[in-house]
Image (cartoon, rainbow, N blue to C red):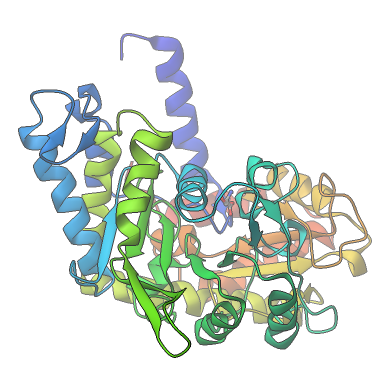
Length: 423
Ligand code: DSN
């Protein structure tokens, strides 16, 4: 690079990524092919509109790339174009979520997602998010005792509040979601069912997490978490959504069919965004192709196996896990019995080269800036090639830092060196 200052920082970041144990469950390491697409000339092109309906000339190849990204996204999740529309233009997950709400819910109407401090997301209606200013947010909570979803209680709440849209799919929930139950809840409330599978999309593609497509009306994902792609959003929406309504006479009810994907496309462009990021779309195309390989299925399986081992080991070493453990890529640790906050733990671990993020636990008595927990995940370490044996070692290292106050930086570096990122 000619810009030496930035080149130096990029090199330093590459070194940091290589030399640290990354347990942030929403991060991953992309392939060289994805990096190449992101850093390609695709970034030079304006392509407002959709394939064959652009506002700029010169989009012959961009059209092909966007169409490939769409077709491969459908294929990666076993979907047919006749049933599901797909939009690969969202800049990331937050704008994608905003677009879904803008497309489907009239302003001021009710939306229902999991409360942020229980594991939900800002854009699922948190009070500081624009989503709760434009819509009336009525959040549901987890069961205090089990720290899990209580479908009966959520159903009762939804029937009472009658939101227009219900969101499931979270950022800090270690268990598998029962989408069928959410479908029933949404039907009883007369609501759309939106699944935000950003965290576990790679597990769905890899066949180790139930597919939400059987039950959802709209499914959103980011590409950069378990899917291991670029920072970008993808929205899948039903082409045939039936509105029960409009009573014609006492006996007949007109079933009006709506293509939700048309509403979503309009909300993305021209509703909320301008020119799509063609380099990210190229990255999505590459990612989805990678996600269809048998090696990715193996990867997804290993992510879950690794999380299971890490969770069990941590438990054996005296750590309390929220909801009693994990069924996914993610673990939430409550540090209350260690007499330290999530912030303190995160800082101590980082000084030793282990990167985690502090996180609230359900019904957290502490503030979000210094909550009681840390959130861990195995997608990044599994990409490096780490397996069960290394997970046991990582749990031991964490205990040595957090409980025994040891300095284990050298051991972390040694372990990382055995599993290079390849860049
Ligand atoms: N910030 C993401 C996460 O870390 O889970 C969610 O968008």
